Length: 371
Image (cartoon, rainbow, N blue to C red; front, top):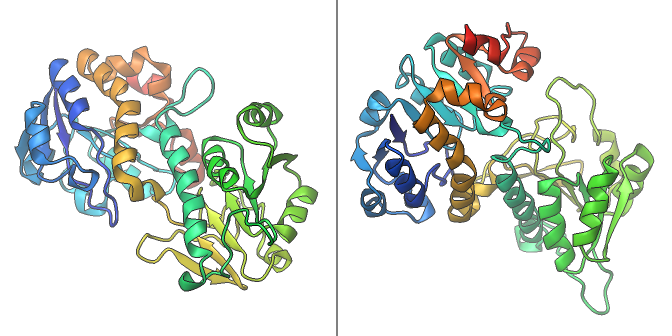
C-alpha cells in the first residue's frame, strides 16, 4: 500500500496526520509513504525527519495521484476534490455531517472515506477524537484567559484566585474529554468551577480526579440558568446533534449573564447548544452578541500543533497499520469500531448521521462492504 501525507491547506491548520515515528512504523509494516514537502513543518517535523523514517518526498499532485490511501487531518477541501481518484481511501476527520458536498464528491469518485471522529470503542468512547477533545478543552480555557484581558477586548478579569478580590466563576457544560480538559486548567488556576452534565457516572468519575473547587450539577434548565447568572466564563463542551432545532442556551438567555462575560464554545456547532454560536477562525476568533463575547474557533488544537500531531498520530496509527497489513476492506470487516467510521464506500453513503441530517440515501456499512 502507498500512503500519502499531504500538507494541510485549511487556513491556520498546522497539524500533520503522521509523525516521523509513525511513518517509520508504517514503513516497517510494508507500506510505501509519500509526503508533500513541509507537511510536518507546522508541527516541528522537518522534511529530513520524514526521509530518515523511510518516506519519500513528492509533489502534491503525485502524493494524491500515486497514493492508495491519503492520511491527513482535516476534511477534504474543494481545492483537493480534483486530486482524488477512484478506489482511493481517505483517512481523516471528514465531518460529512457538516460538509454534504464533500460526501457527494467522495461518492461520485468512488472514494472510501473513513472518518476519525466516528470511530468508537468498546466503552462508547471515540479514541481518535478524544486527544483532540482534551486539547480543545484546555485551549478553550487558555483562550478565555487571553480574551478576558482588557487589552484584548475583555473585562479585565484575571481567571485566577487572587487575595482580596472575588474568585472568578467558570461554568463548563459537559463532563467528557473536552470538559475535563477545561476543568483541569480552570480549577488549577483556583477558579470556582461548575460542571453540568446528565451523566452522573461521568461526574462521579471526574470528582475523583478534580480538586474540591469543582462542583458537579445535574444539567437541567434551572441549574443552567442559575449558572448563567453568576458565571464569568461559560465553556460549552457538548456536541449537539445536527438534526436538533433547539438549544441549551438561547439568545434570550444572554440577558441573564454578567456584562462582559465570555462564552467559549469548544464544540463549535453553528447555532447548536449555544444558539448564538457561529464558527470562527484563529485569524478572527471572537465576536460579540448582546454584550457577550463569543470564542468559537473550530480548530483549537491546531494552536498546539506539535502536541496535537503527536497525540493524533498515536491514536490513529493502529488503524492505519491494520489497513496496511490486512487491506482496507478486510480491516473494516474485522473491526466493527473502525467500520463505524466508514462514511462512504463505492458510491454509497454509509454514515447514518450524515444521511439523516442531509436527507441522503443511506446504506449500512457492513452491507456495503459485503456487497
